[in-house]
Image 1 (cartoon, rainbow, N blue to C red):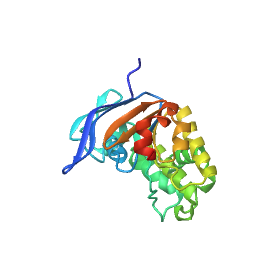
Image 2 (image 1 turned 135 degrees about the vertical axis):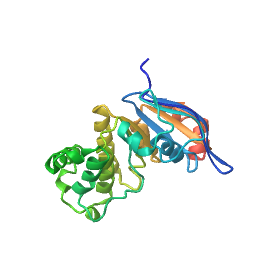
Image 3 (image 1 turned 90 degrees about the horizontal axis):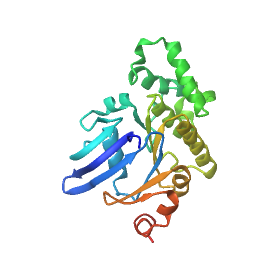
Image 4 (image 1 turned 60 degrees about the horizontal axis):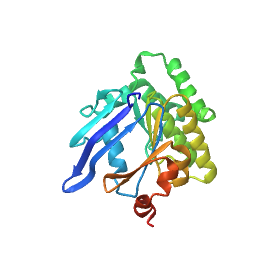
Length: 242
């Protein structure tokens, strides 16, 4: 069996007397479409913050591409190929869509040595892959909600990740808009990018994922194929309230 791209072993995280993650073990294979679900407060956001480096786990280890990255700061994890989008897009509102992408391209990826035209060409390539090329010179504060979500994905893609963590990219979108974002994520996965999807929209995460893990109270309560997860009694009690 191929070595996992991401290996999480016995990871725990506490905030004072509250245990947000309690001995979490999971592995994500290269190229996998992996779904992470659970009710509010289950530990999903804490887990992806530990993976991306914005939080440090108290115990356990996180390995990426065979390297222990548990002690690395977030920017070094990004340079190794971990990128994430955020549930609430935070664009540079005074900048155009193109300029929003050129910031991570020039600084996160050390592209300050390139000519501006080279960076612009790379930004256009990314925007074209998510159907936003026609908005390149549009101020970001004029984008629709779905366009903001697309731009958030584009900014994550500017780091050229091997692993993309998509955090609630479809929250608040219509059915047709959800289909648009799903199509983009499928396309990115087809290009070789491993994707972890954190999502409350069950239909979307079940359509997208090859394998799903459900967290509750900081612990994994179920893991398996989407069909098995959705009918699991523990998941229904914890996540669906049945």
